Amino acid sequence: MHDNNNERLLLLTAAEADRRIGRVRQAMLDNHISELLISDNANVYYLTGRVFRGFVFISLDIDSPIYFVRRPASLTGSNVYAIRKVEEIPAFLSSLGLANPTRVALELDTTPYSAVSRVMAAFAMPELPTNGSPVMRAARSVKTQLECDEMRRSGAMQTLVYKNIPSLFREGMTDIELQIEIERELRLRGCLGQFRVSGPEMEIFMGNVLTGDNADAPSPYDFAMGGAGLNPSLPVGADGSLVRPGMPVMVDVNGNFTGHMTDMTRTYSYGPISDATALKAHALSIDICHAVAEAARPGVAAADLYNMAADMVKAARLEPYFMGHRQHAGFIGHGVGIEINEAPVIAPRSRDILAEGNAIALEPKFVIPGIGAVGIENTYLVTDDAAMECITLADEGITDLC
Image (tube, rainbow, N blue to C red):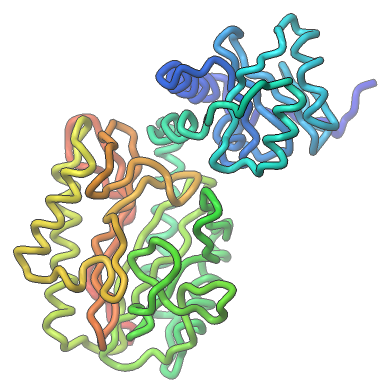
């Protein structure tokens, strides 16, 4: 019987889905993986354009993925099968003429142990499966044209919000009060609110607003800026500090308007900042972004870009404040897209090599003790043979909130 409530599972065009599947297949070949079972929300979204509870099965021996759906059960389409539990999948594969794969790779970086154990038992795996997370990380690191366009849209909307931040400020505000107004503005303009992070090591709400010495409070996370937060259960970000005259206010908030997010930081102040070191550091942050954007071409090593930035900081004698003061972050940039922490990583020991289509958030920031955090962050797209394209276009100077 036809159910009028049914809807097609695949929200991507066939051509777009093929491009993304093609990247996954190539990464599988590069990693010597022949079968991959995917359940992570971000990866499911990448492959289908939606999030559902279930699995995507990809095999190099068959032309198309197979979609096993638990919820919502109304999803339909080619190679879409409703299941109640993972134990049903081997029988489905057998009915399709596929031998039970005992070497299927799983996303071990994000799949809980209990779920891995169930899949191993269902597929009669003799040993721990191969980790398929690097396959998806590699595939997603190079964006398709559609993904780049969605990120440009997110960047444009995020820029509009940042330009409007001075109108949201009122004298006597605390950092959290200002952040709440910024979050409201973001949501009213269509921000999805979700700051999607891969893995269990980082937690954040909709971003950080940091003023004064709170920017120097160490966080358990590998962030350039910390912040004590409002409660030890989420020890990062605004802590209720009053926004005082002459202190920088660093804003690093959510740019997820399309499912593919941008990452942007700008520095504001309540009245002019007079500290010479802070002003020098902010100007250097802008210079680093421009220099790295010019040098970042396909084939360039990410570690070389980090070293370029580090050399500029050393020449300016600002090393004690670079990427933190009491606690330093070990990178100056990271991939961004569906999640905020994607490949490549711009770090001194990174093995990543840039490729056309990489999306990189570059954030050479500084913390000046007794003053606060300064610097910028932009999201860039690596182009074919020119400087990176900046897609977060708010003014890079220190903007007065008055």
